[in-house]
Length: 171
Image (cartoon, rainbow, N blue to C red; front, side):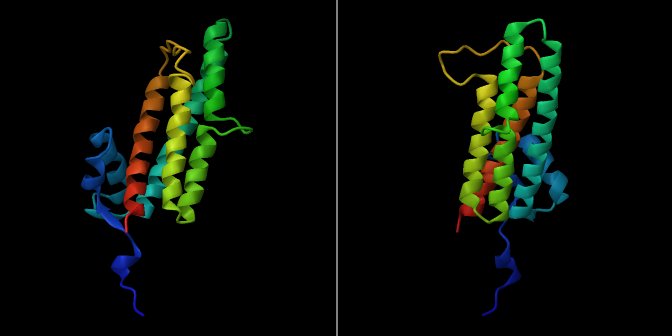
């Protein structure tokens, strides 16, 4: 039995992926920085790269949250908000954004592309829990820091992972 090299890897045009993105320009910038502008690219490689981009953004956001915890020492409401955000982003004892993205990467390496979608969705939920709160009864903290903008970038990048995982699960 001979397997042709073209069937070994799933490829999709970056433009096709980015048309589905929340921010097509950001998507194009992220994916083209890996693909070098190639028309068709290996989806697993793109997914791994995009997970790495998300992880870098998550790490930067964790560092930012930690700095705001220090700065908010005299404001109990702000401090509580940033502590809660830190818990959703980086808590070794619970599911958090950082562990979710690591799990997503693990599933990608195992070829469990449906699981990649689930892991990326968990990232989005945990980011949302930081920014808008866990329950609708709890009004979001009026955060004037740049944490919501950092979180928004993570959400956009993770949406790209979701799109790629959908293509990977197609036969």
